[in-house]
Length: 214
Image 1: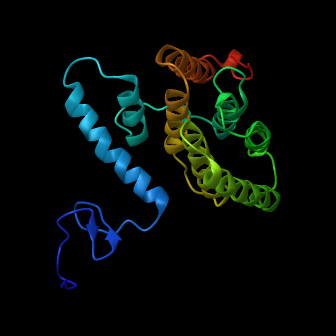
Image 2 (image 1 turned 135 degrees about the vertical axis):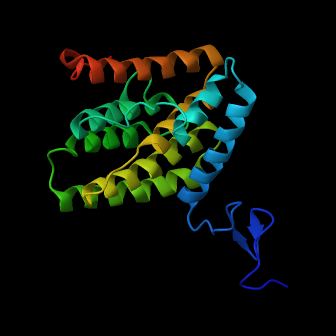
């Protein structure tokens, strides 16, 4: 038996998923963020003062322990880089087996329209993407699940942005990077992720390259 005053001693308590401090995790996105944060802390402990693995670095990006590309700067800069995160021929999610190229390209176009489009029209288009994402995730296996998770996270970020709120983007970026790690040999995945980060850095710090496809 449990009472309202009881504190959970694990993440599963009275049929609910809880954080270790006792608060209930209400949505799938909150659960992913919380698990990322826990794993990020473990990555810090594993890394100590030395080198950490690429997968641990991605975890730390998701939790804000280290800098994550695409999470600062002008909205137009961020949305255009996020567009490439989906459609770039080298480091876009369209290169992930099992992920839909057509959906990836549609999301890319939608991201590019974010800074200048009308709120109602953009919201309607993102709602359609959300439905496509749910269908895709229900059928996906392995690495493609991470890609569809990125779609879900980007959809949430888009609605936050359209509502006038700040958005992180870190969860979507981390999910995209994990898709590469799960789908490709280590050296290939590292090259793709490094290229994505370099593309962001070049656009953020060298304005002349902001419109370039790296």
